Image 1 (cartoon, rainbow, N blue to C red):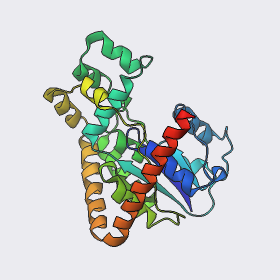
Image 2: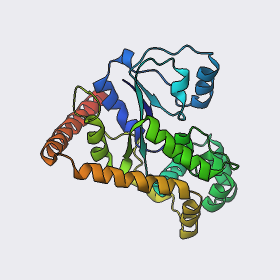
Image 3: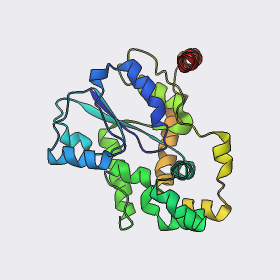
Image 4: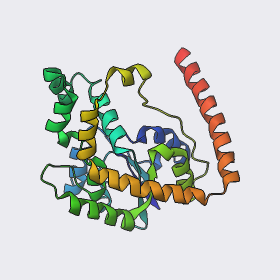
Length: 265
């Protein structure tokens, strides 16, 4: 079975890189460019690029990429959702660490997060999770009621699991029980903002309310699948799950020690 890990920006996808390298050989992981992913997906769609054989494709892309991959046999998507308000805040913080980005330049004009978000919703600040799972890039003219239904339909049809970032370990363990992986889903946390970065950009109550207002469908989708993850976890063999958590801690400790030693050498 081929897996498509649909990595919505700022939903812990980077932490999966180590996990996938443990579970799959290099030739089994399809190469992907997350910077030029829109152009790349379009090239596959138009047949400009011949897809390689693979067992897993992880990266930024919209649902539907499987249609252009000449797949034989079974395939399934996996993705993670994140609390929409936290995801948007994290996305903005990332942009504001990138002086060459359009969003960074726009923010410098008035230094207003409220105006920045209101005027630039298409840059991933409004219902991005719902749109991507529906197979669409967000646009201001989208009928979000139809897009939401399409996202639900796609999940029901082609997704093995929809995990929740705030329940990352629980979600990974559920995926592990559905996939024939060689090892427990070991990973290490990557691409995490420091406390100073978090404290340096604050969102007032009006801005947070704006984020809520323009992400109602993402909130609805998130709440639905968070309930499913919670329900699935309630049925988990807690003894095996605790064994996984214990071994995960040992792995992360060993991996951190290895990383520090490699940086010194």
